[in-house]
Amino acid sequence: MEDPPKKFFRLAPGREVRLRYGYFITCTDVIKNAAGEVTELHCTYDPATGGATPPTGRKVQGTIHWVSAPHALTAELRLYDRLFRVAEPDAVSEGKDFVEALNPESLIVVPDAKIEPSVAGDPVGSRYQFERTGYFISDVVDSTPGALVFNRTVSLRDSWEKQKGKAG
Image (tube, rainbow, N blue to C red):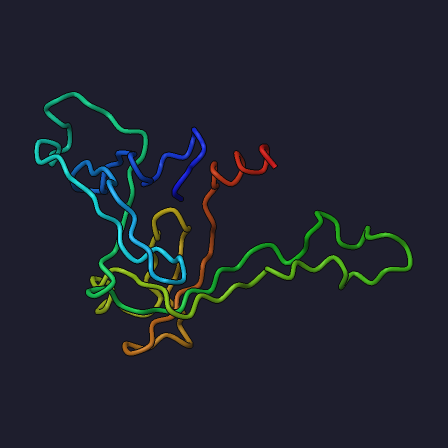
């Protein structure tokens, strides 16, 4: 986001964040292709901030986790959500079918997600927390060593989405 709102604590031009288990970085430039899509971020890092507690005592609002795309594994993620849009689907207005209360986004499939390569040798049925996304289990039917599939079992609260909803 090139012009983020005040409480956006993620990487943006002129903003400083910590890379999870790494350094503080500051975005100095955003490079786009001819279509206007971001292709590169130019950043600087502070070598004094590489420990658990930076010696300078400086703090940042955001810590971001990233995965190196060239080194990552590709996996299918199945993001399950509530089946119904309302708490009591049988209480839908008279004359309407309960099907109208179905959540069209109860399953979103992300076919080309990038994940840590360390999970490659884990047995089928292993459980994980994918940072900022939720808790997942590798699918015991569809997941194979060459085609990993993970099902979200529990999502995480997203305070940024809540904040965005208040503004809208």
